[in-house]
Image (cartoon, rainbow, N blue to C red; front, top):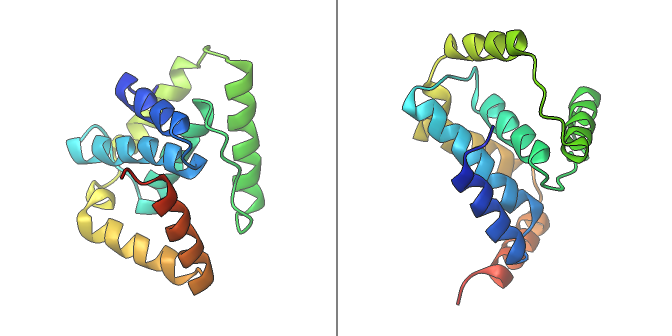
Length: 145
């Protein structure tokens, strides 16, 4: 379950007209903080980001999977969006405990500044110059004056 502050920050972003990816960024940020605090770990930075995006979708952020996503990822995103609409609160305690315990065994290095920097650099390198420029211009429009 996302923290109250995270939900409020995401709602604020939505009110300000920011992109769904920006709203979801709040949940990713929360996940990175959890790893840094030692609450649990992650096998990779990608996994930490995926957990955050999943939380965002389940919290109601209208975030479709990217075009380059695998079929599995697209299916998971559909399930997350469906769960958000349904508003189901019932969780399997055995499953959530197993997931939490498994994540606790993972390393904490996935949230290090170096790992995050490496991940961001790799993600940016996959995009075209035009794509990066477009998103920078879009971000500039919503920036506080």
